[in-house]
Every structure is written in C-alpha cells, then in structure tokens.
Picture 1 (cartoon, rainbow, N blue to C red):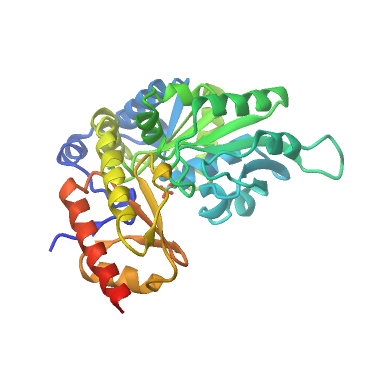
Picture 2: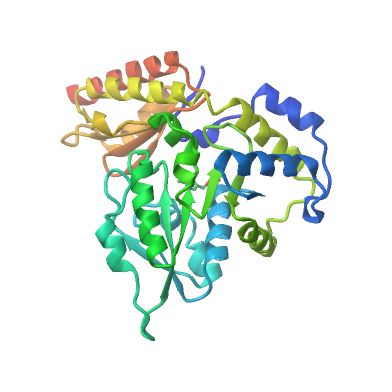
Amino acid sequence: MKIVDLRSDTVTLPTGAMREAIYKAEVGDDVFGEDPTVKKLEEMSAKKMGKDSALFVASGTMGNLVSILTHCGRGDEVILGDQCHSFLYEAGGIAALGGIHPFPLQNQPDGTMKLDQIRSAIRQDNVHFPRTKLICLENTHNRCFGSPLHPEYMADVYKIAEENNLAVHLDGARIFNAATALGVDVKKFTRYVDSVAFCLSKGLSAPVGSVICGKTDFIKEARRIRKMVGGGMRQAGIIAAAGIVALEQMTDRLADDHRNAKRLAEGISQIKGLSIDLSRVQTNIVYFGIENGRIKTELLIKEMSQKGVLFLSTGPDKFRMVTHCGIEAGDIKKTLTILRQVMKKAIAG
Ligand SMILES: *Cc1c(COP(=O)(O)O)cnc(C)c1O
C-alpha cells in the first residue's frame, strides 16, 4: 500500500538527479571557505534572490535564528506575527540564545500584520523600553493558510522600516511557492527585505538545508554567528549539491502542488461534516475543519492513517494537509475517496 503522506512538504525525498549530484559533488572544508559546491549554491542563491551574498545553513530554523541574531543584540526587540514560525515553532531560540525580545502582533488570516499596528509597536527612545530593531515577515505564511504575501504589502512594511531605521527579515521558507502563486519572480518580494532565509528541503525536495541571503557585510557577520551556534559544516558540498539541483530543477513544478491542493480542497468542500474556506487555498497548504463535532479529531487522524493517508491535526477539529512532489493527482483522488468513506461512517454513527 502506498502511503499518501500529506503531513508536510518536509517529507519530500531527494530526486535521482540529487543523489547523482551528491555522489559526484566536489567538496572541501567549508569553514575554511574551501567547498566549491557550497560556494556555487551560495552564489546561485544570492543571484536568484537579488542579494549580494548568501550563506548555507542546516535548516530553516537556523536560517531565521542566525539572521535575527545578526540583526539584533541582547535587549533589542523584533516585531513579528503571533502565528509566525519563528514565534511559534523555533523553541524560543531568539530569546533563549540571543536575549532578543519578541513583540508579537496579531496575524490576519492572509498572513499580514496590520500596518498601523506595526507603526504603533515601534518603540520610542526611552530607558523603559527595549529597542526596536527588526520586523519579520513570513511568505508564504504557513499557519495562515499558506497565504502568499503580496509584493505591495511587503513594500509598505519596508517603507515603515526605512522611516524608522529598522531592518526587515523574511522567513521565505516557501518563497518559491509565493512566487508561483502570484506569478512573479522571487525578487519582487526580496527587494523589500534586508535578509531572506529560504528552505531547500521543503517543496524543493532537497534532503537538508536552507540559505540566508543579504548584503555582503550582513552575510559576513551571519557566517560568524552560524559558527557560534554550531552550524559551521565541513564538507557540506555533499548536501549543498542537492540544493543546487533543487534550485535548478524543482521550482517550476510547484504549480503542480498548488493545483493538487486546489483539487483536494474542492473535494473536501463536497464532503458532508467537513468545512473549508476554499478562497484561502492559494498554494500547497490546505486547512480544513470538522462541522458540529461529526467525528473526534484523533479518530479522523487514526482512521485515515490506518487506510494509508497521513496528515496533521493543528488543534481541536482542525487539520492541515500539504501537497508536494511525492503527491500525484491519483493520491488526491484516493485521499478524497477514503475521507468520504470515513466521514460517511462517522455520521451514520
Ligand atoms: C519549516 C519552516 C521553517 C523551519 O524550517 P526547518 O528546516 O524545519 O527548521 C521556518 N519557517 C517556516 C514558515 C516553515 O514552514
């Protein structure tokens, strides 16, 4: 039985071309700056993001941590969304390791924070206050329905940052999904940020790694901080090689994942006992819920997994399914068929 794994796009496996590239990768000691494959990935990444320099890191979490530690010192404050990955899912790293104070603002369902709330969150110079240094955005926004932020919104945030001498960091774990959904080049987003971290290991299917891009001086300092948190990797070309293939071959196919997510969402909207806001499904993430407690949250997850379909619960009566390169149209069909059966049985009681 093929398992249909919709838990996350992190479950994607390296492609044949990636394994080939890994096998053949030229490597050296990257902490000495001598790994040609890492260098190539960093140069490609900087160019794609329209930035001067780039730094290969072990994970998206490390990408955000190193970026924020580079922007902020102890006692500085970062404005971020209360649903963003850095605030919710990164073990409080910026506070634990950097003494950086988060100022969470409410995320709207489209992943934005209200501009007037950002403006009023910026601190005046006063001994009572931490110093505001940074605004963080997330695009696409994982917890907010995988919504892509529009370049116009990012431009507005950047303007506020410029007027107040703040930096902007973008958690662009799925920035290529955002670019695909809105039909624009990634540079349309990244021109409005000082730093961006994007993942190679999600929809792009590389086994490991993320890349931070920014100005040369910023990346130079980020390289020191990466070493500090234990992220200086030696013959890292072994994994960077797969990242190069990811950038070369895997960005154009994300539209397939978005189409499959749409199909999945439309199917879910037809199933009695389930609820979904179809207008929110714009990328590869599908959130849906249970109507009127028709089935227990854990029971739905359990029954579906016994029949070979895996996905996550994100709260009571709430679920998330993520499409990716291991999911084909037939898997969507199968998922919907089984979901229909399970719900029918539950409602029949
Ligand atoms: C997955 C994710 C990350 C972290 O990536 P890891 O490689 O799992 O550490 C950061 N931000 C967002 C929005 C993510 O979805």
